[in-house]
Amino acid sequence: MTTDPRVDGPGSRPEPRARTSAGQRLVNLLARGLLRTPGMSPVIGTRLLTLYVVGRTSGQRYSVPVAYLAQGDDLLIGTSSRWGRNLRTGDRVAIRLKGKCCWADVRISTEESEVVSAYAHMARANPTFAKFNSIRSGADGEPNRDDLQQVWRGGAQALRLTPCS
Image (cartoon, rainbow, N blue to C red; front, side, top):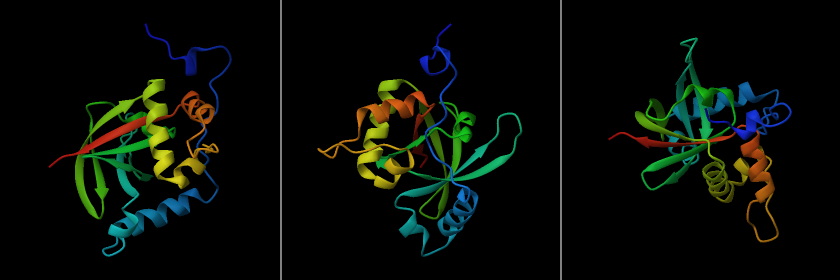
């Protein structure tokens, strides 16, 4: 049996670090609409995509706008939100990328080194992602290592999506 120090350590599991404002549903609704709109989707879709996640127990379909970072043919996503628990490595998930719907293969990383590295890449490339996840930058412009580790301890995982041809 493996243990996860984020869950199995002393004390209770820390609260997730990603902040969700009271207006987040409205923001998500607006983002989903813009990501579907011809002419707007290529502009807003340079950093956002819509991920269509199906609940493992409920079977309910969720449309989730998320920030991503392109790395070669892959799309890197970081989340500590509950919808991320519905995905598993090897799953295929529907996405809307730059206005077009397609399928993507999923690989989930929960190991500290992989999550910290992925979040560091995303924080460097997208200051809004860093701010949303409370990742500060040091004087050298690099993401704060303690903040990155705190994000991991808060339940963050890194998703690597490979869109299917």
